[in-house]
Length: 131
Image: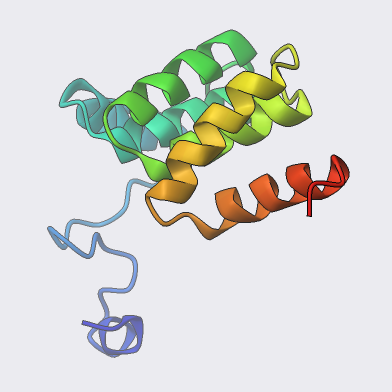
């Protein structure tokens, strides 16, 4: 149920799915995340990519690895990964600017209901005075 009920039950620091306690160190969190990555969970793969982008959770900052993981997550169906790739390519966040590639990813995200993707597409059209 809701997070308020979980807090009252004393399980707010537990996984909402399996009720196991959250790992208490970066190494333990990374190990748990890598188990999900090994099972090709697109959300986990994308999250690992974000950690490489920022150098968090015990991994060294590696923009190339961040993009590779995010592209894999997008291929596996992560709409959030599609949006991030579109934003990164269109705005040069850790990658060379490739507006065409960025728009392609943003279009895919928007077509799957991503409001931020739709917004960035609109901003791109506005900047071209295409309104």
